[in-house]
Length: 543
Image 1 (cartoon, one colour):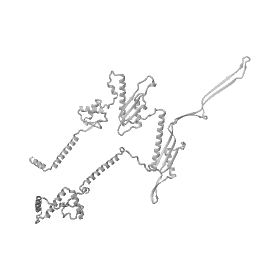
Image 2 (cartoon, helix red, strand yellow):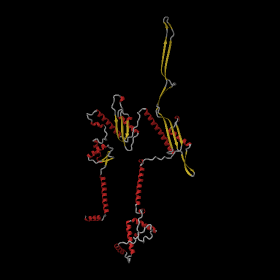
Image 3 (cartoon, one colour):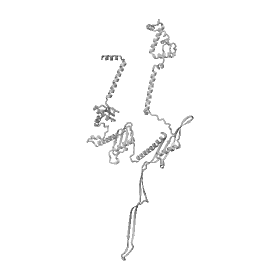
Image 4 (cartoon, one colour):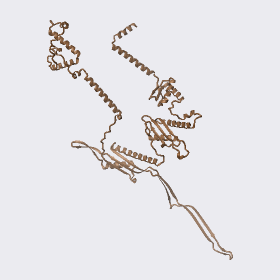
């Protein structure tokens, strides 16, 4: 144990201050990472208890979880609560027994705690609240709807019917992210609310979303002239779009995408005609009934007993049934009355030599090819000469030059453009930072700074034999004869004698040269950039 402690102490004493700090930092980092991994490994699995909660319901549920000492996690701005998987089902049942979450919407459960002394006004108010809450819950079950709220206005009944006001309703929807409602969905919500309130019509139900956009359109009453006109217009649009897409897809497969433009206009007959026709066949007869009447009459003279001749009369009545045919014809509305088709065909592109340079020209299509395309279009739309249908096919060159898109604002940029802009800004910042470091580098900074004058006496004469006077200025008068102090000179002589052991005697020139070297060494230590510049200048002159 003592040997281990001694070796550890010897190891610690052998470390520098920086090594000791690095050892402490590394140990702390390892301990922190290990603790974080252990916390992740031992943390219980969290599962979603409730999501899309109202803030009031979320607060109530959190209070209940704190009372039961159940750990929880909040996400999505407090609208989602997670609890450990082991307590998930038990907690959900316990909260359901306490009526949570209520989603802050009151339904028919408002009558579960009705008091006997409640007035008629409160009863009606509670009924309207319950009806609004039930409708909101029902609408919230739709796939695209996240939350719904319904407001009903039910007028009081009046004595006279002409003074009775109609009920109205408004529905506010919070749609899920990226979801939208079609016209059929909105119409379904309107009819759902209208069918739940007595006397309410779908046209009196207004539907808006969380952004205040009106989703419901003013629709005419069913069976009215305006409603029929709208239905007829929509039917004609669908027929036009169907026939146009049918011909367009056919021509795209033949000529290529973008080489044909088709427009079809269908004139529909919305007249509803009912005809009754009755035909008789005189050649085919059948006896329906026959009646024969016979009469005999005798007359005589009673006095003379003379006998007169007898008279007879016979009458026959025959009734014949003539066959007849009764035919009732009803023409359904929406029958195609006339078709008009217009098709523009792009010409063919060819390369020709003009002035030694290739040039692209558009050649119109031949009459035979246009005739074939016309026959194909007629067969596709069901051309009928009896209806006076018209099909027009023309070959014209298309203008393929695209107009430049209008400039978009900065907030309308696409994500790719945002990324490109950010990368360019980062590159500019890095470029400026690199340029700044380059200008401050030891290799380039001496060339940018103004040269500092260096006394000629600071350089030994053997090193600078040919420096021009413009680059190395001359010394002031009397400075060349300046000698160090007596004590410094003695110390310098002693140092020179030790270093120049081979020299027989120390001359004045040797002392002066050594003094110049000392000044040069001091100057180099104080201003290394200028010294490096001078050395590079000397090397360039020698070369």
